[in-house]
Length: 145
Image (tube, rainbow, N blue to C red; front, side, top):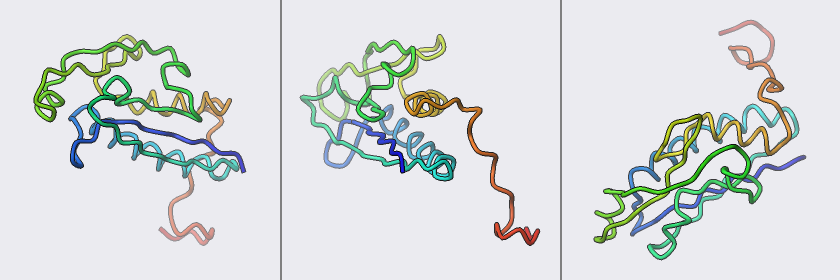
């Protein structure tokens, strides 16, 4: 079975993270579950790893890696930073956090579409190669709903 390891690095302060990291984490969790369902029938196992960072590692925060490669190296994404009110509140000092520019829009969290595209590209697949959606019902072919 082929493997896709998706790693999310983010700030963790006593179990809390900033709003933009939290939004990325929520989106990532949903997309990882979708990918597991879509890729398993193709013989691909998706592994999800969360790496918690401290305040000295802010430049690495809100980074998503696909088999060790950052999303900005997989897709045409520009990385920059801006003032993060949420991290500033968590850390008690002015903090500038990572932003990404995807499809011409600057985003403070990483969009689901970018995560999906990066996963498929890293695997050498086109999204059109996704298996068809599973039929509704119990899956045994009996036609129940």
